[in-house]
Figure 1 (cartoon, rainbow, N blue to C red):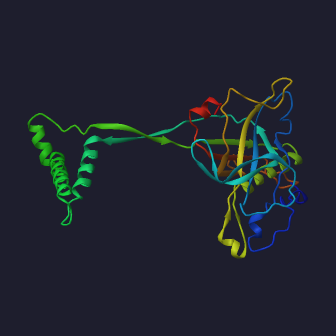
Figure 2 (cartoon, rainbow, N blue to C red):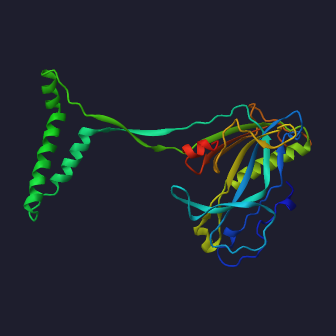
Length: 308
């Protein structure tokens, strides 16, 4: 993208030491690859929209054109919890790419093995700690009970206790249970291969890579502002398809993706193991771009019913 297109998002002149936290210097126009992406021969695309971070203390001035819609905010209340994300506003520009060869989704749940015997022992330890020289008679009684139970379990779980049990043909049953801990944030990885066939496509590929790198990076202020980061932008990812006369429709047969942050970017300018470039421009003849995203919210049954 030409330098004249790298414009300030906020045209208001902000004063003070935190000035660099309140400006974003890169607003992309609509970028797409390949150049015939919206033709009838290509019916499916993946579209990335960018949600730019706005520091909470910023007083808005004039903005460049943007799509309506905001996310985040200070302790924004959601259905089940508080959402501690910065306020972000959708930039009026998208990146549209071909659907990569591999599209997958995974849902991971965490469980923990818990021993009932260990839980009893921990409870007994808590009771035993109640006894002290200034404790009441009742407290000392429970402390004694706790100590006795704890010592008994310790003997049973000791090597000598296990050998004795084995000799009798028995073994201690720890009463293990599987306890649900929670679910993880979903992650999505995409890899794209760009083989530009013209100077225009080479420039578009360059702009696409730079746009992702720019919006995945934080901003560091100057002066006193150097003590703070402005967090990177987030991304809204959509699978779209031609849909006959209704182009750009969400593909309901693929999962929706909640608002994401871009965790990792890998760019390879020589993916075939040898450097190759156009003689007249120096632009690489092929580039691979790998992107790893993580959603900002947990996907529960309600979200799954909504298509996530």
